[in-house]
Image (cartoon, one colour):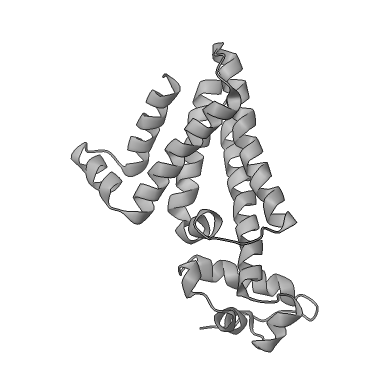
Length: 197
């Protein structure tokens, strides 16, 4: 693999970029510190100046993923002034993120950790807060008395389940094809029906 040169004192940032590049190409389980070091243009031993092991580096990348997801959903919701349409856009942003970044998605939601760092916990909370706030705005706009946390759990379960099906199976693609729809158009149609329940 081609190495990426880095300036003295900027090794940590170079490692982040190298790991990001690998996550675009490989499953998290296939990434090694040695491969990260090679892309960053440094030695394997040099990584340990910043991270005690691969899990610590990947946890930082997971936090980055949650920040990216939160920003994408926040932008999608706020871009559209109508709360219902904004809520559908927010859900679709989640699915688009998962489908476009399957390795990040697995790292964020399918990786077991015995202990979660403060940095990752904050990113997880921020991501959830975007969803919860959007639920409150939407429910208020239509006069629904549903508990926002309950509605958020319903919405999250829907987009998370659909995303998992797309990443792990061919079922959504096959069903969408039988309806002559792209996978994301089918997702949007499902989201629209769900907000009307």
